[in-house]
Image (cartoon, rainbow, N blue to C red):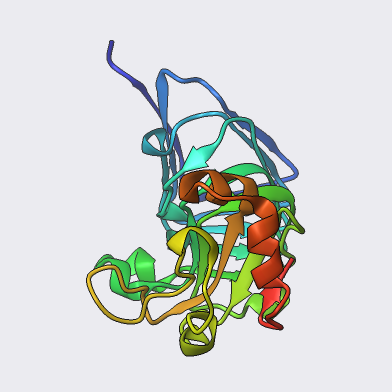
Length: 209
């Protein structure tokens, strides 16, 4: 079956509710799209959602199924937005090194609220995390993981977990400003417990939980 393509571009929408929930559709947001105080209901896989050169102002994202490994947020300007639902492996903010297209220069995030979201392995790139509100425990957020790498890696973490890599094949991008994990999922992956992680987390003032 050929997927239906749905485009939102070259316009400004305000106080609208967009239901992006048809699993047989591919949704394209952008280019030159501005959404103000809109609610976006998302219930599609990452490969069915494309975001390019979009400005979101005061919008609410209601994610109805886990959104996995979605990097297109770094092609959007996000200001004063609220996120609800489950996100894993997603990146937000300014990361121009990710791609050569002009929209990668456009990405930013500020004054956004993730307190009603569940983030796991999600990063803030090239933007100030001090303007953002992160989810509480069992999520935890490591601030400045690159700058604090030596300190963070100086202790033994459960399950041989390393919170930051600054060298080698898996090194984190230099523009990584914060990373948030969901402790129950991380503990399962590392075959340990949430409590074991919390006992280490409590030692650092650069970790929010």
